Length: 94
Image (cartoon, rainbow, N blue to C red; front, side, top):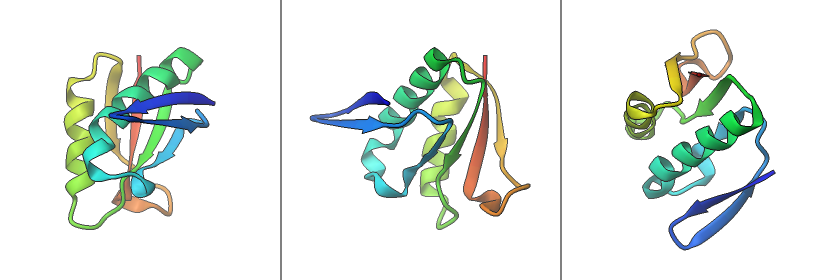
């Protein structure tokens, strides 16, 4: 479990290597993904899954914008091999 700080709220999340963004506000996604990557890296995880859903692609674009710039991200790609299909992104951390 780790504390994730988003604006004025604090969330306690299990750092399992998989996070589902459906329960969060779109405005929190950028800071949430950044914090989650940091927590996963500190825990020693080297691959994580971010579930952003299919929809209109708005969350996916926000997630990918964070991943493109994040110094702890080695690579990322759409998860086409699981039941989530292109509604999730796999992230390889350094």
